[in-house]
Amino acid sequence: MSGPLTINPAHLSDDDWETIRSFLDAAKARGEVVEFHSRVELLTPADVAKRLGMSRSTVLRRIADGDLHATKVGTHNRIPLAEFERYSHELMRRMAEASADDIEAELFGE
Image (cartoon, rainbow, N blue to C red; front, side, top):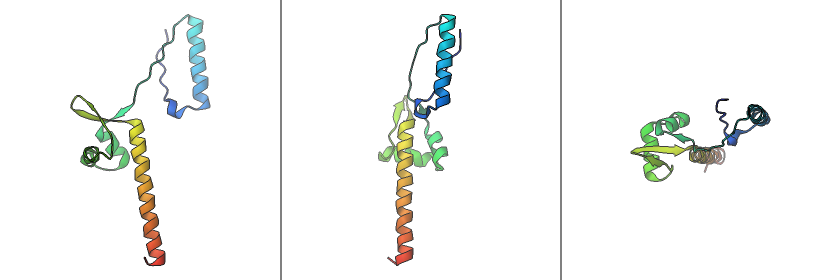
């Protein structure tokens, strides 16, 4: 019996497809049944804070304000990885726009 194989489909490479094929071929040769499962990767507010370079309390405020969507697991907030990525890209876009405005003001005196 072989161990589990975990792959994030969001980041599949050609090497991953080869690994999947080898895993399936080996299972077939041993007469094993392969089960596929999926799960949502969840981050804690502390994980998000660390990745974004902000405090955990700031992340919790963003959740409370509705800027960052979280799921309650018991009494704890959990942020789906896809939501973290959306929010991270939104922050980058806002920072780029603010920087562009600052540069324009500096160059043209607005």
